[in-house]
Amino acid sequence: MPNNLSRYSTNYQSSRSIFWGQRRSLGSLRDQGGSLVTDLVPLRRNTQFQLLWAGSVVSQLGSELTRLALPLLVLALTGSPGWAGIVTGAGVAAAVLVQMPAGVWVDRWDRRRTLITGQAVRTVNSAVLAALILTGQVRVWQVVVLAVVDGLCVAFAEPARTTSIRAVVPVAQLPLAYMQEESRAHAARLVGPPLGGLLYGLGRAVPFVADTVTFLVALLCSIGAKVPRRPAGEERAQAKRSMRRDAGEAIAWLWHQRGLREVCAAVMVLNLLGGAFLIPLIVLVADRGGDAVTTGTVLAGAGIGGLIGALLSHRTGALLPPGKLLITVVTLLGAAFAAMTIPLGPWWPMVPLALFTLSAPALNVVMDVVIARMVPEGMLGRMDAILTIVSRGLAPLGPVLGGGLAALLGGSGALLVIGGLLLLTAAGAAAVGELRRFTGAADDVPAAS
Image (cartoon, rainbow, N blue to C red):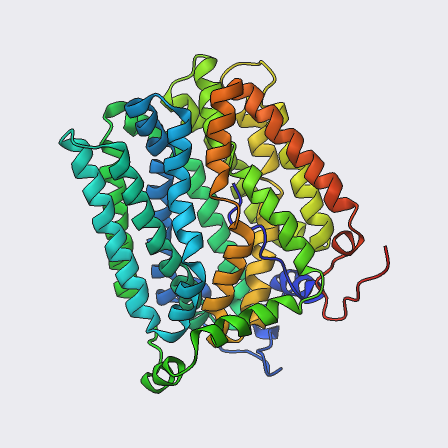
């Protein structure tokens, strides 16, 4: 599923030129001051970025392994889809709750130290869970606690990584960097779930041991990247500022971006309902006779569509303004969830899932590029936190909602309900003129409905 659907461009027209500009030679690009950039090192030779990217690839692959294995483990321990939803939602809730102070601290602290510390704690946390499973001592409450710890680490590590990329990649190369980032995410979703199902079939602890190894590799890559540290004088200056003032500054920046308030409200609902599908899908595939490998292969549909969509994102991102693109994405997701219930066997849900995810990457890439270009570097951590909170404020309830609906209505019934609610959300969003007409351009002026 898309991870950053709320991160919309606040200057859509500039985003169009960014993406179509990739077709020009690097020698014709200009930097922020308008000067010609003629001596850019190709992104593939940017060792710092490529190490960050490689570490993230491996780490996300491990996370995708356990994305399926974790609810399967909880279902095996409790037999309850509701508990599986609670465990899955616990980590998301922890990340969202501390996102704002984490974003402020990331802007104040040494970004290299923050990134490495976050990766190290996630490595140890994953190793503890693997050890508990191997020794047969694992309990549901322990899984919840470890999920919360991982969520707290994500709240710090992800903004630190965002600011690190901006620190090591020239502005002119950000479109290429974020396209590579988006491709990484969907490639992991393509390979991870079926591999996770396969490894879980070999033994409950196997995917979690593999996840620990991936975190260790990511940690070593983060160390090797040698991200520039924040100057000591800048750290001291930031430390003297009020945290409330720092947070308020970022909130005020977002509040004054015309149309974003309505977009963010719609995306909160989108991520709530979009995050509710996993447990019902697992139940649906099992009801149709599928095993863990089948479920993982079905989930790989998101990786197939997403990877293709990421490679085409520089074109598809220029077709629609953000408001209309949001409405389109919500509509397609609702239709995809409803289509999964067509009784064509355990493999069928893979098809609508792959078709939907063709549309999502362009939205993520456009947002990442434009936010990185527009937001001052000293505010990137806070803005990453604000956008994450806004977009995922209701997301922790998604797995709980999905698990509850699956327990009450079964997999097919739950997916039909979730799909119907998404279609209603799309209709409501289309009825809001400011959202429908939102382009994110600097001169966007809300018109009367």
